[in-house]
Image (cartoon, rainbow, N blue to C red; front, side, top):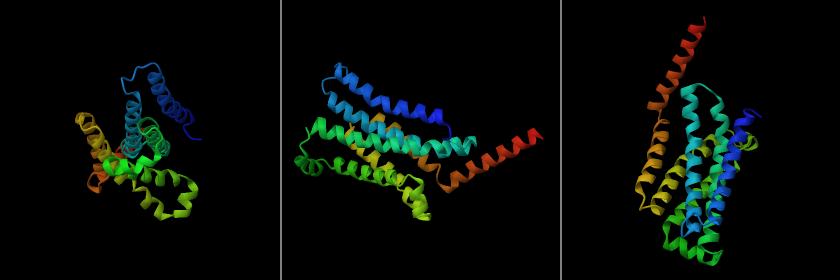
Length: 208
């Protein structure tokens, strides 16, 4: 496995954070409503991992180090994992595992429906993030994985609906997401690619 130690570090960091939050909840350090804090933290964690996975391609183009791309899939899978934990925590802490009321909640609170749409998109991406799917889908694989862009927008809408009282935090995530989408436009991505080509040529000239 390429970059094993870096991958292991990402795995340990991502896997340990939810346990740390549970520990804080156990010692009453998450405030009067620890369940809601856990739900919110897991949801924002999913968004952070989603943004991190989208950051890998621009970093690769700017730095020329192909290793960034090797972390993209892992970060994307953690985004799905955190989103699934976010839903599980919501069902357990906020609904008390009363699944019969989930439909009513989704109708009364549209942000739940929006969140479910984002999770469905992440599920499709996670389920096809393997070599077998790449071979089976061929060119359609890239088309399918462009679904990550609407998933990001839907996730940001979901968060905005949930944390309306903390618009500053949402604006930070939205700004990062906007930049990551803008750098994928041809008018922006071409200069980045040209920059990397010039950098490679300059490096070869210096070596010669």
